[in-house]
Length: 270
Image (spheres, rainbow, N blue to C red):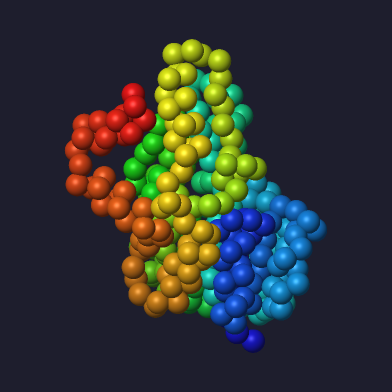
């Protein structure tokens, strides 16, 4: 029947591109999202099963996994792609937004992973792929919430790979650079607030976002990296996606904190 991957956040961006790519490679795809009834492209693809899954809803997580296994018999890979970015001064964020950011990007990822581990353990096989970011290794201004979640994903994944190795399961981290996705739309929560002291850095960051350079990658490039990570059979943990990811992460490793801060302030003209 072929191998099967379950993907969260498959309604757009990296999740959707990955669903399409794996289907084209002959995989079965359990494409999950909060509103599958609104999906039109994936619905028409052979061996793609649409299921409702909200990472904040444990029942929907368990149901999607159960229905996927019922149809395809076995799941070989999980892609935790659901998430969004919250940016802005920490002081401007209501507490409920802070909780939602960590519940979605961190707790939701752990709940989905925890729910599928028994299936992988029973088969002594499986691959868990977590979408991190260059923002899980370095930071940009006004991203304390988003970067906090991605640093958490890195730590969770790195530690998890030790225990998963005991049951034949591999853990992979994908670190994309800047990707042309819906991150600036429905997958983005920006809270500028009304505190004047932060306005210079807000203006500088907004100027950068409005004038992206040509290093922005398309989601399908990340999908190709994810496919390689799932199928290469190695114990490699981290995979970069995008030329800018390689450049920025290498540069950050070579810099002291002071050098990095100076570079970022210069780029934002602060």
